[in-house]
Image 1 (cartoon, one colour):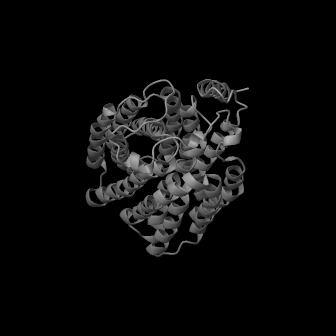
Image 2 (cartoon, rainbow, N blue to C red; image 1 turned 60 degrees about the vertical axis):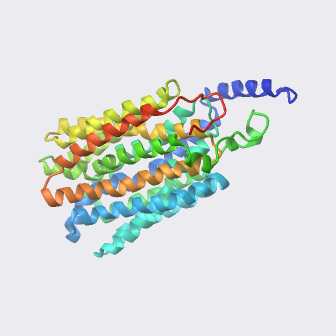
Image 3 (cartoon, rainbow, N blue to C red; image 1 turned 90 degrees about the vertical axis):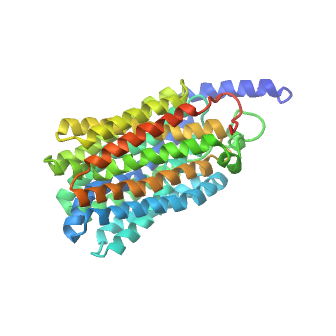
Length: 425
C-alpha cells in the first residue's frame, strides 16, 4: 500500500505501478485508445471520401473543381470556429459527454448528402454541419482522455488513436469508389452515414472516458489537472512554433488529399488507381504514426518531427512531377508517412510541455490552425488547376515552404517527461 505520509515515495511508487500497468494489453487505457481510434476513423470519412466524390459532383451538377473544393474549405473553417469552444468544454466536461452526440450528428449529416440538390449553398451548408460534428470526434476530442491513462507509453497510445485517421485513408477511398460504382454517389453517402451510426457510435459511447482520481494509483490531486493554464500556453513561444509548423505543412497536406485522385487521373491513370493513391497514403500514415509513437516515447519529439516533415516535403515534390502510378504511389506514401507521424507529435508535445490541465483547449488552437490551412490548400489547388491546367508549380512551392518551416522544430527546448510540465517562454 502507498503510504500517505511520504509524498515522495508515494509518487515514485505510484508512477512505477502505473508504468507496469501500461505495459499490459489488459490495461483499460488501451481499450480507451482503441475506441478513440475508432472515433477518429469515423471523423476521417469526410476527409478521404471528399476526394473521391469531387469528380462525380462536378460532373453531375456542372460545378467547377474550385467551387466544389470550397465545400471542403467551409467544413475546415467550421472546424476552426468550433475548435476552441469545444476544447474548453472537453477540458471541463470530459470526452464522454461530447463525442457521442458529435458522432451521431456526423453520421446523420453525412447520410443526408444523398439528398443533395443542384444548389451550391446546399452543399456548403451540409459540409458546415459535417465540419461542426467532425471536430467533436477528431483527435482533439480524444487526446486528453487517452493521455490521462498513460505516462511512459503515451506516445504509442496517441499513435494508436490517431492511426484511426490513416486506417480511414486506406479504407474510405476504395470503399467509397466501390459503392459509387454499385449504388451511385448518393447511395454511397447514405450507406456510409448509416455505418457511422450503426458501428461508430456504440463503440465511442461505450468505451471513451478519462481516468478518474479514484482509479488512479497516484495519491493526491488528479494528474489530469496538473499543468499550465491556457494563458500560460498562449504566452509561450513553444506553442506558437508548433502552430506555425502545423499550419504551413497542413496547407500542402490537405491540398494533396483532396486533389490527388483528380491529379493522377488527369495524367492518364484509371479512377481505381487514383483512389488507390489515397489508400497508399493512408497505409503509410498508419506506419508513420505507429513508428512515430514508438520513437517519441524514446527520443526528443521535436527532432523526430523535423525528420517527418522533411519526408513529407519530399513526397509533395515528387507528386508535382508524378506521371506514373509508381511515382504517384511513392509520393503518396512519403506524404502519408511524414504527415501521419507529425499529427502524432503535436498532442504529445503539448502534453509534455503544458500538461493535461488545459490540453484540449490548447490543442484546439492547433486544430484551428490546421483547419484554416485545410480550407486554403484545396482551394489553392483547385484555382491552380482551373487557371493553368496543372498542379505542378504550386506543389513545388508548397514542398519548399514545408521544408523551410520544419527547421523551426529544431529551435524547441528539451522537456523532461518525468517532471511536472513547465512552460518555456
